[in-house]
Image 1: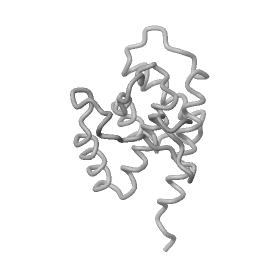
Image 2: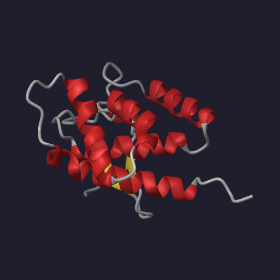
Image 3: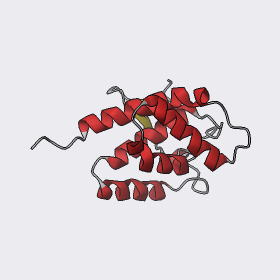
Image 4: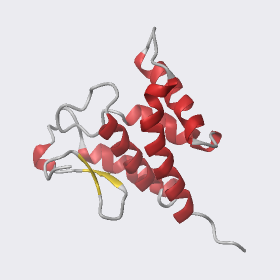
Length: 142
């Protein structure tokens, strides 16, 4: 990915969304709204804001609906909200692909939804992010 990419992989292998205030149209995206979202998630559970940010970055990177044509990092926020709340229900990348499909059908009112294989690459990357997050945020053994 180039220097100007909206979504990029950091040197540590995690995904991030580039947040450059000068390039964000305030009519489209409110950075303070996004910051409040992350702060609220962090209060709920430490590290949850980072997980949300990474999942959002992965969705923007794959951009299955072709929504991220400009610097608009919150296009997939409603979908990521729903997925984040249900991640604990899935036990594999394949299961996550079905969940992603379900959420996209619901959110985009798809009358002819894509096959689950269409969502597999996105789900695979999201699963990797989720597993790494779980590994690094696991409660210590007592």
